[in-house]
Image (cartoon, rainbow, N blue to C red; front, top):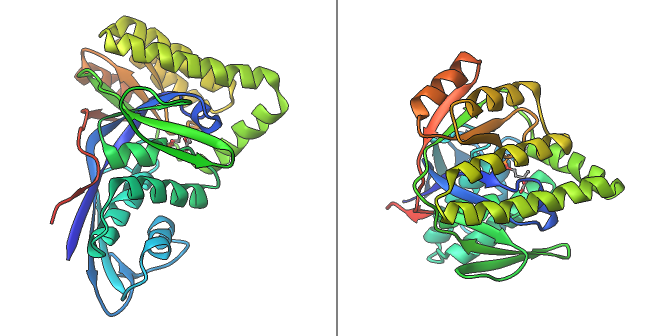
Amino acid sequence: MVVCSAPGKLILFGEHAVVFGEPALSMAVNLRIRTEAEVSSKFSVNDQDLQKQKHSYVYECIENVWKGEPLSLRIDSGIPSAAGMGSSAAVTVSTLGALLRLKGEFDPVLIAKKGFEIEYEVQGSASPIDTTTTTHGSGILVAREARNNLLWVIRKDGKEWYLHECDLPEMKLVVGDTGIRSRTGPLVAKVRSYVEESSFARDVVSEIGQITLQAVEALSDGDFVSVGALMIRNHNLLSVLGVGHPKLDNLVRVASDLSYGAKTTGAGGGGSMIALTDDPLEVAKVIRENGGKAYIVKYEKRGVIVEC
Ligand code: PMV
């Protein structure tokens, strides 16, 4: 039997724009998914027969890397699902880790690359930001070209993403989940059709990329006031791209009053926001008072690991 785990993630800057090759910044958080795998008489997930529709990510992991005997998998998630914290990437990466460990081929580069292919396949389109963050842990900067601390390069459909480790300062972040479930694939498709037909939307996407690079500088200077202002600008540009939601905007507004800044995190259309603050308990309280679920999260350095 083997057990692997992988962390959740938050996108700090650049979601959606990263699908088009623009820079983006993310970090792993201290919530994890564990996958336990052992050889068995039939394929099962948490004692249910493995089903392609129901267990789409796990099913694709098995299809992609496992040619052996049937497996019993037990998946234990400490990451809220569809809340912008990367639960689908973490389940994919922890499962790939467990399968590859059983084969004696555990390798983070392989896991990040396969994880991206699987997310792309299931979601319809994707960037490698989620799967790389949960694989490597720490902060991740996606850029158009190689910079310091390059981890790996991922290519797909004529695009290239250079994935780097990015050391981040200690930050107090609160996630506010609107509870409105939105699917990433259709939102990515919606932004894509807007970008294909409108040069204005293309300008918005490249401005989000510029904001990400400015945020990397501000974070390395520990200048949270500038980071907060950039968060608000990034949030407003995501709304322009059509992935906003009134409840999300409201949580961003009330949290901003008690924070350096706040913004959508992940695909939007409902989903979640983050706030950077010195007072996480007060921000969590105001998020709850406004109908959201609040999570105070910490920076996590560890990516996918073999636990036993
Ligand atoms: O909602 P999440 O956590 O799956 O994040 C999606 C991020 C996007 O940039 C919208 C899509 C992607 O694959 O990068």
